[in-house]
Amino acid sequence: MKLNVHELNRSQTIRLSSPGECIYCGDTESKLRDEHVIPYALAANTMILEKSCCETCQNIIQRYEQEVLKKQLGIFRAQVDAPSRSKKRDRITHVDVQFVEVNDGGQFMRDLGVRSIPVHELPLAVHLWQSPMPRRLRHPLTPEQEQGKPWWFADRDGIDAMCSNIREETGANYVAYKSGQVNRLHYLRSLAKNAHAFAAAQYGLDAFEPYLLDLILCRSDDVAEFVGDDPFDAPVQDANGHTLQIFLGEPMGGEEQGLITARFQLYPTLGSPAHLIVVGRAKIDIQKRLAGEI
Ligand SMILES: [Zn+2]
Image (cartoon, rainbow, N blue to C red):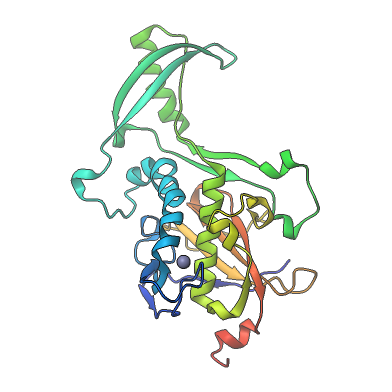
């Protein structure tokens, strides 16, 4: 599969005018709010689609999106000083870490209590999810294979040093703690939401038949059909300081011709999984739309 790629320019704020309807449910009647195409917490002000999300959809989306941004990525974001709307005094300064003693097989032996650790002393760790390609783009797999698995980056030296302090303090042989967690369904649903919003903003809602609305609005939990990873390594371009790379493209040729896909990589410099999301099927000639011809 070849991707015909457009990259989001992160150096400026782009404001796009309202499509006149909610990009998730099509509602034109109720009050529409501005939608950050990519959550503010990940990319600050990169692209805002004005008056494009109704309150009902916003409430559904916020339930899982906020959990991803706060529980899954919150500590890491605080550590790398990602953009945050919360006031200084509300920001995370300390994290309660639960330490345990484990045996040499890694099994739980006893509770060593909770310590409050300043965020800047906590070893860096980020937890994401790794999946096969979206089902639409590959041969069938077993449900277990489709599930994918957790992916994480961690500062191992930092973790060893912190655990060694606790070992000395408690006399335990092996010390462990949980550095984070991922709710697969919520995380992959968030990716679907970002991909749909990005495609709607870049191409226009009328440009494609959307595939992700049932996932975004929690009417389906079958994330594996449209959300997965790109197994092909792409070079990390100009990733210095970038927390997110997002591309939109159309596979050229083959059965996938006409599908619109988004490639979404958080923290690319860490070698994180590149998520691939099938957004929908093109209804118009995308190249002509981008050239302003239609
Ligand atoms: Zn809506």
